[in-house]
Length: 342
Image (cartoon, rainbow, N blue to C red; front, side, top):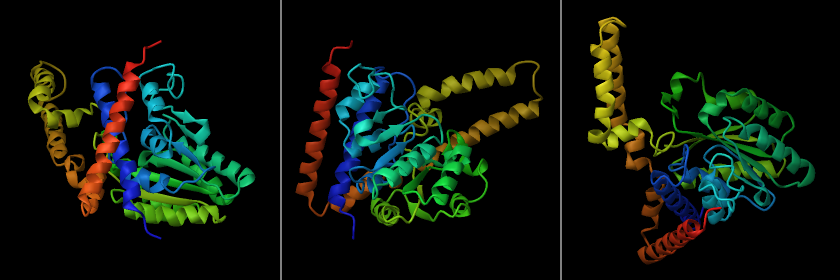
């Protein structure tokens, strides 16, 4: 069985355009607080969610918007929630990191690693009450250093629970490269609990779909859990307004605000020895140079145009599809903004 790109691309494109609209509203100050977007994860989310059935459950991390949207949650409800409206998905009090939909058996949490025990609980309920249904856990690679996720893998293995653990690995823990804070192989950790592990390129929706298809079939048939390790790139960094990306995208506007305090600190009498100050400045300069070559800046790591390229064999159908989705989202945003705030 092969994935249908004409089915997967609309899910990915709709998610991308929706999150771009969210980003615009955030920049305009209409959405407050931190904003963690899933741009760059679309191939992973679409490859998984497109294969879920009624009764399947999802436990999400703090980037849950795309999964909820692809699962069929009303985008207007999601947007109103982010705007803090009482008519939002969670009454306007959950925000983007705490989105829930009882009808879709979907729950998200801002607590790192919390999707592990939530999905394990969903899977236990599925095993006892809805045989043939499964649960999905979405989380980042940093969550693999959380004890509760390790406990979830162990329990899922011991009880052969129908759950697929999906690790979205972008290689960064906010501003720290994950390799410098995580020992060993994540797949080896899963193997240590007796959980089969699959490595996949999370930028390629066809490869994700195929890998997840086998894992889901295994879970539905009583074969137990699977760990999926998918590499991806968060195109906006850890959150909207990510400092390093701001500096690279707008050096004239951002660098002076960074350079002036650093220069004043460097020239101030007293404090650390000169060699330590120089070392600090060199480190900052090195981080800036590395960001210029960061994978988040490489368009080849964007999963959406990669799928679009494959669909250019039928340009008329493709453009009609894109126009329809773009038009729908314009109406959704206009409707949410036109609603009178409570």
